[in-house]
Length: 344
Image (cartoon, rainbow, N blue to C red; front, side, top):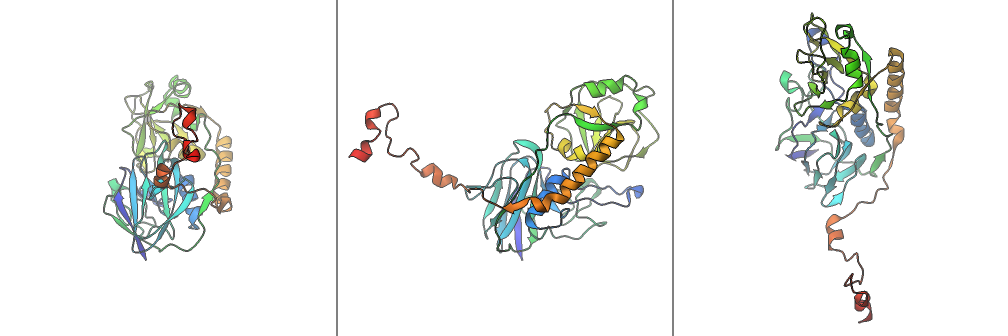
């Protein structure tokens, strides 16, 4: 056995899997990964079950160190720089950390959450059938909270195998698709305002809900309703008229009218939207949402077949900086010196 040590970590980093289901009627929060496709892709790279627990990385820097033996990991999700001892590590590939080596993960350049899967999976004691962390509920394993510097994860020692890469389709651009309702009749002209306006995610958002910034949507009959069930992607409109999109750590019920619901196939793409980036919503029919979900499910199941041996050149950044990549050139302005070293 080996260990993966959390040397430093971005806020918002926690262990997440597919989530816990079957007891929402008792108020049990589902939790789970924000971007299930990225999580599943990381697991596919290592031959793990697709929805096994991974480390969901926040958008800032993190460093993980192997201890007691080699550790093999895969990085997916938000595009960001990463390296081991100066050698670049690409997103959507695996890398093996020798004992004592560290994986340095930089700030997300596009997207919000990254996923770090570990060969053999994260080890812990399931709570209600899942390792997924929900800090507010005190749920999750091996730590029922976000990861902190100094945490240690017990992991399998890396196997001797070829590093892998995975080919994923572009997440696409364009509006986030929604199905209107179930309380869209509470908004009248607010529905057109919702669909025809540009929105941004507030920096105050978290895994419980993404607060949206944009025009205020007015209610017809006030902002309180009899509490009813919610799902991932439910879009509530509280009293200030600024919508909140419910995320995996949401409550299981709520008392604000819900103008629409983000379709399942777009939840991951929506969850990766960075705060301050403008986007729009687009209404689709239930049939269109179901067709998109079936296509998304087929993509998930195809992930193992998309894994190939890696042919990505690993660059030694320190060696490159010390190399004379200009050859024998001495002075870029004076061409009489260009071959001086060769002619001397």
